[in-house]
Length: 500
Image (cartoon, rainbow, N blue to C red; front, side, top):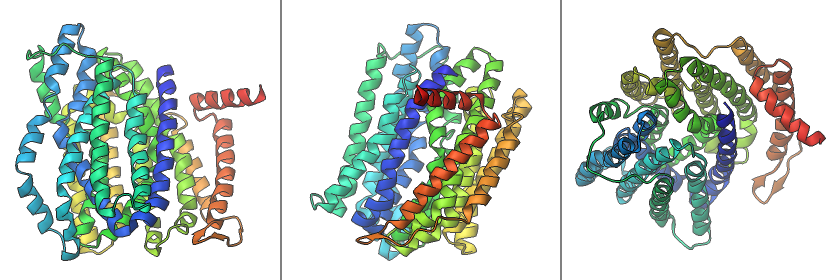
């Protein structure tokens, strides 16, 4: 796990810096500079792109990770890369040709107050293609065991670009209407930068020859087309459905709550960047003892770190919403709890998705992806449209879907490979998380009201003091209980540097 922790540490720093900037954008800049209506519009455009992107990418980003390490010579690797890079065009070109038809279908489902979307649907297509090819070239870099630069572009670049553009709106350099246009340019530039970096790491000799196992490669790409993207699709379906019933501002409220709830998954995103190629290599080498070792270690470490952020987020969320400029955001407390619970369940699975996607049982990834999307869509229609549970119903649909398919994934890997993520510390870790949530959820420091202009400062002070107390006591407990040897080792190194 040495290379995992080395690159995961760098990736974690990048991701949390990205989340910090994203938090500033989401909680302060979007809500004040762009306002809820246009924020909801931007959220719809980006969410729609996220839903279409996995189909457009044609599963190529996962196919590269799966097969690259299996080729023993450069000639076969070059044939593989130079042929697979064009697969996304199979979807992208016809999609672009019929885009006017799809645009009309999209607009037809919107109430009159949301018809403004018709001026922006083309940017859904542009961002979709750029994100698809970004992921392809990012995987190209990951199989060279170089994930940090791509992670900077994936997690940090977009948020910095958004921050710059939001300040440009505030300073009247660009209009609210132009924000999405310039954001699209930023996505185009990101894809080009990633492509150049990938070619710099490994530039194949391009040819029109196919690798010897091209039928297996195409078959895999078809089956894996939704693998690994199911969780993103689940959340983005929610955001896309809201403007069909309510004003765009409701999508903005829900987007903020989902962002806060998703904050806990940052370590999972960091570790996954390097675990994907490592899992693929160990499976290709038939080293299933190491596969099980990665499975258990990734699960307990992600549960430990994810649990800490689950407690921090959910015990501070009420105070956090007091900072928001509109009262509508405060209705997202239950959304945050359910989304963060779903993310915690996903983190507990560790590298389970990578194990399935890179094993001979990869075909099951397609029904899992399709089943997850259908499940959340049907549950959304039930809870949101028919029963009128509001956005809480959308979050409940997400949580139920995550639980059902997490149990299926656990059962499937156990039944087919006879391995599971459980250790003798798993249930103890779950107990610790539960106790900390109950202890700190209904208690706050007594801080008098303090404002700077219209921004409430006392909730920020309360959050800071409470978070320090939670982190110190949580780390102390998990170290004493020896939940994770890797985590204890990191803490000892950190303390050793301070003592030195």
